[in-house]
Image 1 (tube, rainbow, N blue to C red):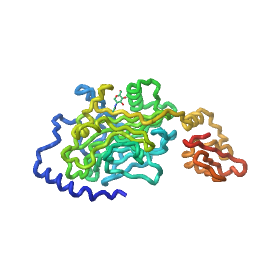
Image 2 (cartoon, rainbow, N blue to C red):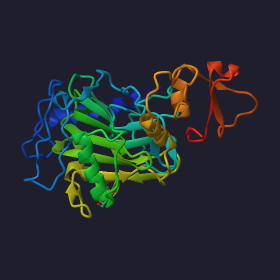
Image 3 (spheres, helix red, strand yellow):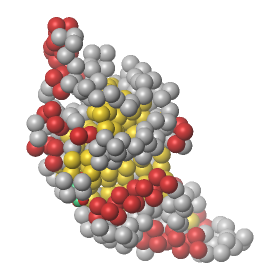
Image 4 (cartoon, rainbow, N blue to C red):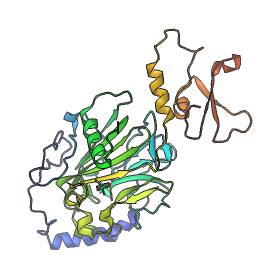
Length: 371
Ligand SMILES: *[C@@H]1O[C@H](CO)[C@@H](O)[C@H](O)[C@H]1NC(C)=O
């Protein structure tokens, strides 16, 4: 699936040559770096405000001390387990059921649970709207964690019923400020932090990258925030060749945006921590609206309604209530999909096992919503 190793061979020898001849030429970075050492034991760091230096946005606190989980494989390419937001995640014009992140600076919304890949090569054309893969790219380029350097931390925040969480409040406040809409209330948020990521092949490349992606949705609207650690984006531009880094997103159904850095020279592309958004006044932060249009989220309404119902102790098999979405029902062993006649995608039905004796059947619309 990922058989692209061959292309790297000539490049490896070239970079080795330039490394051997020019051992002192480094990335051109002179500022002391607030980055902790490259070991995976680097738990909490960041959160260290760099506001005195620039108007740069700080990464949200990350690492074990911030309650994050660590996910890294000592392999050249890898993908995280799937996340399944209970109310789905709006992307383009679709409501997505699942997503995962990869070592290569991507968050991907797969078409099915069996299409889980880490795509090492960024699209040479940038996002075009014809891209088949639904993908959010804070820093899509070929990273390499296989030598034991660098790691990835993540945390999922479910705030369906208004639970309190500091990182979510911070993300909400950024979103409210940038969209100029005070009403945004996150219901599900994912924070992924790539820490000291080295470029492939890690044993030959100089510099590492530390950056964070935050995806947040209120069920109808969804946003991505990319935060680049000030001074923490250090890949050696001289060692990049072939496809260059890609930042932005594509919904897989025709809605997309490329980072404004995509039209800049290569040395600026690789330093997104220095990018100043003149309209927001924030440095090192990129912001994307991921939903094409706002739609009511019936799964969320249903979940919230269920929560508001008193818990009847007698609720059980015979009075099974309908799952709030087709996707949830498929994971609920009490229910089975029924295929009597020709159910199109626009009408899907789930019935509990007892339904032939007069149990419960539930039907779902095209978004998987209970109807
Ligand atoms: C720059 O800021 C504006 C307004 O604050 C925002 O709408 C836009 O998405 C930002 N651009 C990027 C690339 O983050």
